[in-house]
Image (cartoon, rainbow, N blue to C red; front, side, top):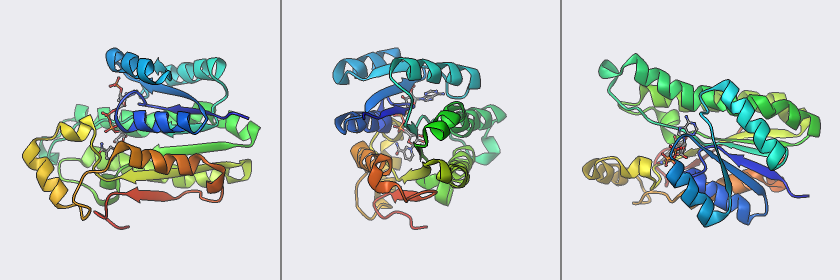
Length: 240
Ligand code: NDP
């Protein structure tokens, strides 16, 4: 039986690597994105993976989009809540808008992505919920009060879902990537990026494929007894 996987924010960066890996592993895969049509079209042309556009911050849009994916691709067995944004500013300069945009996308977005398909997973007695959190949700980060709050909140979501879903064959786990070479990180000024690399014992940024491998494992039957966990993939930068 071929399982269906959905990756939010799967058209670029870490999400694209996850979507490709799951396709290579034999899943039916769908990926979502927010608005960058060119990147999504290029991704579909390269991989053959269908993309869907909706804003994860909006519950009704998410529910409608998820229903469309389930009708066109199949009932979602594996959901990877990966879509995320940053709106960095030191706390004294952070605007309510910067706060709310990040909370709505990175935290409420996870609720909006999982809640509409949760009952289906319960009825089918199988599900894998995998949330892409961040090292900065574990340790906090200068100028990221908003982002760190969401990524720490994501860990609370999976720990709670793990308890609610276990008897229904659903696991919920998080991955906390350290700094990964995606557009999000490459947009940081080079000097800052060099100082970040200096803090990573591995002496390099991570690759999106290294996060995709963690997802592939958590999605697999081999990971059936792993529930409510966090995998830290950060080159040794931070230990919990
Ligand atoms: P990118 O900026 O490269 O890609 C983000 C993806 O999310 C895009 O597909 C984007 O769509 C989509 N997206 C953004 N906002 C929304 C929204 N409101 N609704 C739907 N889709 C949306 O991000 P990364 O690959 O770097 O990051 C992926 C995840 O990993 C994020 O959750 C991030 O916080 C986390 N992470 C990243 C780290 C890193 O070093 N890169 C480190 C730790 C965690 P579109 O192309 O249309 O904008």
